[in-house]
Amino acid sequence: MLVILKENIDNLGRIGEVVKVADGYARNFLIPKKKVVPADEKNVTAIEHQKKLLEKKRNAEKLSAEELAKKIAAFTCNISRKTGEKDKLFGSVSTQDIADALKAGGIEVEKRAIHVKEPIKALGVHHVEVKLLPEVSTTLKVWVVKETA
Image 1 (cartoon, rainbow, N blue to C red):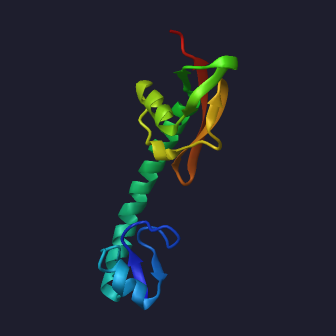
Image 2 (cartoon, one colour):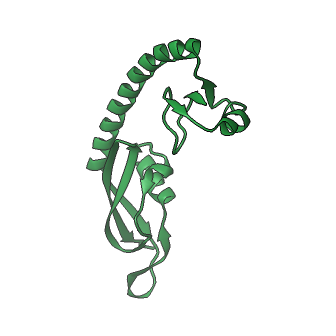
């Protein structure tokens, strides 16, 4: 069955795309959840108009994400943690900690956008990827320092 996506669906497509899915998947899941509409002539012409509006919105989002990426790349994040013997951290630095430090610096980023390759469990400088959009990402420099009592 051909359907038009009303929202982004992982492994299926983006808003406004016409995709072919199994009839049962469309009837039993996608249409009742209002994630798609059947691809008939009326809906296709309506979605063409929506695509133009959506493209303008995407371009504006991309520009704002690129500006935010420049801010993040220039920002240095300092996080202080308690340490034990041989400067080993108690626990690790999480994405929530990084998001909170960015927020304190005036940069609002969701913690889901922050990708840490491996847990940060040591003092020093760590490079963390921040993925704002699928096509816009940047690297953040995170300094983990010893907390002074």
